[in-house]
Image (tube, rainbow, N blue to C red):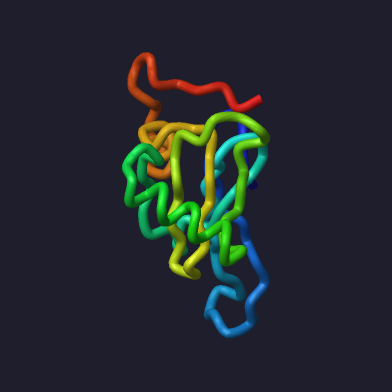
Length: 114
């Protein structure tokens, strides 16, 4: 059972008969505003400020592989997925990394995600 008040990620049990225990676990990362991505499919979390990352985001938008999960706020992190999708988040890379590892973000880095 997930406890969203205590952690920002959870393990969601999915029925799967091929496993000995009768299921597999999918680790989800909360990227803000109730949006989540599969942590296992995540390759990188980067800042959107550099020119190469801006090009990657623009190319993703043109190809239709960019997913905007910012809810109209400024993009502070770009998540690069193994499916060639680009996910935009309003949370900083530091906050997302802390959520992924289950740690508390450093002082001054905590973000509100509505």
